[in-house]
Length: 203
Length: 73
Ligand SMILES: [Zn+2]
Image: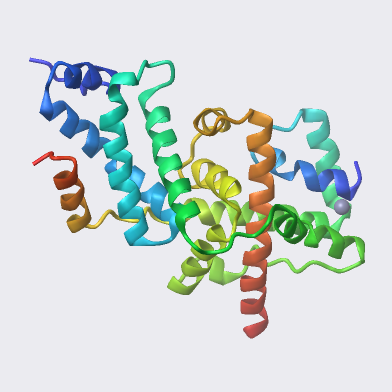
């Protein structure tokens, strides 16, 4: 009797031998994570569910071609991220252009250079117990990021993948991941700054 | 390092990927520069707030619909 939990790779071998329960196990291992990734990238339950389904349908179609050059989870994240990016493209919502986005990112730098004294909201009590409105604002802010910045940020700072794995998932170099991550974080910082500074002044 | 340079290295600093020499230089700068200190503290807080959001739970009905679509059962 085998007591240890099978690895993803062992499950895949079993699936190839026609074992349906192995596929079931693999799905239950990853369905929550894929849904969360999709939800953070799209901020819509319906769209996240579509992406979840597309992802596993694509896994079924592609499993024969999976060679194991990257780990299964990296491969799955790539499929899920691509499905989410495709969904974003299909939406009619206008995305910020790269230059508009960078303009927003570096607004704080310009303000500081012009002599502004930046407000420190890092110890605002509202950040300690996030209410629904704060969470909604945070989710909305992710959705304002241009696609590629959004993918990098969600994989790295929400899903917690190491930068090297994010690079592999997205087909980018590690330095490209890091610079996009930094800009995404700066943008989100500015957005939260607007929200939490207002909160401070309201108190 | 001046404020401009510091600004570009803050994520590396927060992720503890900055070389020691630069790290010390940055920390020295932070002691005397209010704005850079605010940006580093609020950037750190931003990342930590996003880390703290709980996972969005997959609704049971959505899970069932997925299993149906991929013919699990
Ligand atoms: Zn400075």
